[in-house]
Length: 214
Image (cartoon, rainbow, N blue to C red; front, side, top):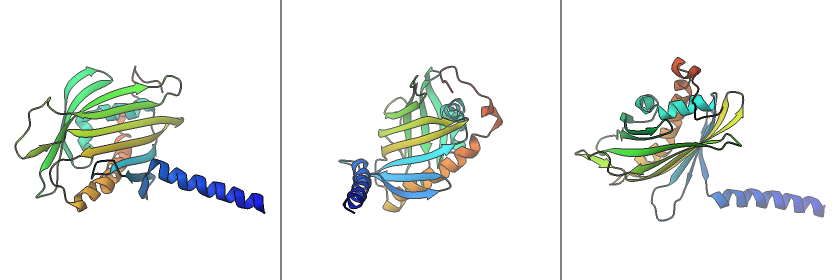
C-alpha cells in the first residue's frame, strides 16, 4: 500500500512540476493542432507555442516555409510578402504586412530566416528574429521590431513531421485584449489548417532541397 501511494505521489508530482517548469498552458486543441500560451518576463504579451503533425517530408515543409511569396495564402491576416535579401538558399530576409481589423493600425515586419539541420537527428530548426530597418517605414503602419519566432521540425516517420512553432512578438502601439487573444489562438489555428492544405499543392509534392536531408 505504501509503495502504491508513493508511486502515485511521484507521478502526480512529476506531472505538476512538469506543467509549472515550462509554464505553457494549453488554450486550444482542435483537429490535431495544439496551441499553448506562456507568460514572458517583463512583457504584457504572452508567448505562443503550436504543436502538430504534418504529412510531408522535411524538404516539402521547409520549401513551403521558405516560399514567402505564397505564405499569404495560408498565414493568418498576412499580405504583401516579399524577399528583401536572399543570402543563400537557406537564409533570407523578407518583408511582411499583417492586416489588422479596423480601427487598429496594420503592422509590418522584416524577418531574418535561418535554416539549420542537425546531421545526427535530422531535426530542422528555422529561426526567424525580426530586424528593424532594412525597409523604409510606411505611413499609418506600425513597424514590429521586437519579435522572435522559431520552427522546430522533427521527422517522426515516413513522410511525417512533428512541428513545434514558438513565437513571442511585441506588436507595438495599443492593441485591445480581444484582438490579442484572437491572434494568439484563432490565428495559429487557421494558419496551420491552411498550411496542411497548402502542403498538398503539386509544386511541393516532389521537391528535394540540397541543404535538407529527409
